[in-house]
Structure formats: C-alpha cells, structure tokens
Picture 1 (cartoon, one colour):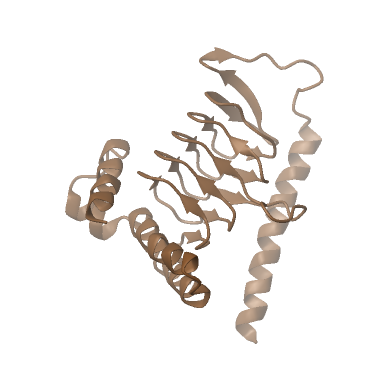
Picture 2: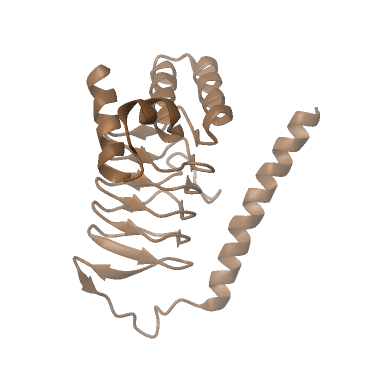
Length: 212
C-alpha cells in the first residue's frame, strides 16, 4: 500500500508542474484523496460489503467533488488534476498512467445493460469537461480534447476532438475527414443538449431525494 502511495505521489509530481512538495500533494490534492478512498471502497465492494463501499465513496464525493463508483476498476499511477465534477461509472475500467482533468465523465448512455461504461487504455489523457459515454474502448496513449463528447471507440495513439468526437490525428499524422464524416453542427448541439439535460435530471433527482 505504501509503495502504491509513493507511485501516486510521484505521478502527480511528474504531471503537475504546480506541485511543490510531497506534503502538499498528500494533504491538499483532492484527486489523490479520491483515489485513495476509492481503493478502500473497491476493496469493500469486492468483499461484498456493498453498503460500506458506497458509504466510503459518497464520503469521497463530499470531501473532493469527485464521484467514483466503488466497483470501477482503476490501474496504477492514476492522476485526476483539479478534479471537481469528475464522475466515473460502475463498469468503467481505467488502465495505468491515465490522466483526467476536471469535469470529465466516464459514463453510460442509458441504452446499455451489463457493461455500460467505457474502458480507458494505458497512458490516455482526457481533457477538461470531456464526456466518454458507452461501453467501448479508448485505445492506449490516446488524447481526448477538452469538451469532447466521445460516443464510439477511439483507436490507440489517436487524438479525438469535437461533439461528437472524431479522430483528427493518429500516430502523429493528421487524419483528413471525408465529406461523410464531417461533424454535423446540428448533431453537435443536440449532443451537447442531451448531456446537459442528463446532468440536470440527475441534479433534480438528487434534490428530490434530499427533500424526502
């Protein structure tokens, strides 16, 4: 456990130039606190202590603003920078050396059963506000641009941008979009509205539950 903590702290130092000391990272970084609490929650979940697993995960939300379902599978050296508004769903799987920024959602579309959330490969970076929705894979060493909405599989070593997201670079080479795959601005706006409505519905349901 101590070795894993050292790895996590080093990952922050390697990827965040604002990190000035080990003590600062350990005490003041919500992303580190969230992943440490997730490991406890995940252990409880795997040992069939479902209530206590959810209890730990919800405490993490209140403390950090980061919501990770205790069943989510997360690899080594995972780094959440800033972190506020990050949501990771129950069947999400995250590889090693992955970086997420604030506002990222690894969620579902509501249309799938069983495996509902994405699988994120090793070395992936997902920019602020991006939404990755559905049970597909984002390939190793890919980058998802800030604000992108990813609704289908992304190959390894790719850069995806837009709403809905399209691969614009693969293995360092630009990918030219043909006339069929040019992003439709109407679809982009509808997709944005769908994500916004889903968020509002969740907030409304939460408020109703609190009133009860």
